[in-house]
Length: 614
Image (tube, rainbow, N blue to C red):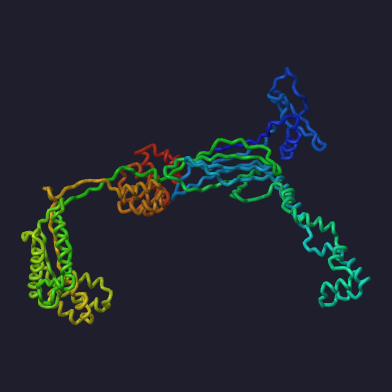
């Protein structure tokens, strides 16, 4: 139900000694006075509440208004009431969507005020949490008041029009010319002469200077008056325009005619909400003016209260845990680029970066062995070959290279026991070659297709023979094949003190809880980004809060109807998707689980339509 604030415009208590001016103001404002028989001030034995009337002579005519005895002064005071202005909250329940809230209220002004000489000024103040926000003012101006404003502007325009802008209009040109023509015919002849006469010559011809002649034939008084007008334009503006019309910091909104002659002014205010905000209140200060002079302040009505519905309050804030599976046996791997001479297996530490790579691997092994949590069970060394040559030769070469690297590591540190070191056959690493070719950008599409066709051959020797016919084989052999001559180090470890092969533990899913907090803080973009992989209720809620209704429903339709909130959210999203019959079913199901959701539905505009349904 809409709430109505009534602002009664009552004349301020006026003692009889000064009542003439105030009555003149009120009567001039369009108030229709009750006509009553004039009376006197009550006798002492008469009740103080006796009402009478006050007669005052205004511009030759009697003015009659209702009056009553003032308890403090004992004098009669005018008490006529101007018709009420009403402030109506259009919706007490408003929704937060995408972090924005929009509230509105209507100010209903009776027709009698619209035709009056009054101006009503409203100053709304919105209370958000502990903050007061002063909104833009609103002026509702009666026709008579506006007429006086326009009259002031018209008088000022007439004043400006009276200012002479062409100074030649202030010189009596006809008399000046007649004077010159009569006494100085030679000079008058210069009127049609385009030659220029310097000042000394003009003095000789005239007998007086030009300035003296102009001053003599100038309208000095009018010039002075004109100069005064120019100087006092601002002062005259304030004199004539006592109450300027200005839209600065004044709200201009939609005006709707109620059809009864009254005016309904709709004030709409949008603002960004804050987390946890459940309601805002709007207070109203105001005043009544007549022709630029304030008559009285409007009595402040009770505040309008708006209850805010935010979908984020439906978030499931239960702590979410994730399961961590800990394996007893751990495997790790690293690669080293050890350069071998073609067809040879000896490790030459003088070639390129061989010495540095071996030292890096040695430090890696020692760090693993010194780790307090892990125990090194074995280290497997595997050296690879490029595809050139027979597969049998490459297998033997791979084994020899693996053994050579193993021996180097054993000799480099006494801490690395021989029993920990193993070797394995890597040979021709075709899988790595497939990956390198797929990521290379210099091979042509024809080369890639040729390589794909050759890869269908299972025999490695025949496959390598086919590749030799590829146009880009030279590039592949010189640039890609060397990248296959790597050494792989596989670490096999187990966790110290752990007996079981696997251990399952749980811990708080901090990423998920961050997403829920973002949802509560109305940061919907962040909430969607974090929660969407989970595809649960909160993920669907974050989509719905951000306005992604189809994405929200894609998750919701996969969720079982195990809670009232899930059913309620399904009803809300389906309502947005205009699937009303399905929405009603889910809404009823939600109420069966949790009847109090009926009160929640009052807050959500999407669900409000269902509240009155049986």
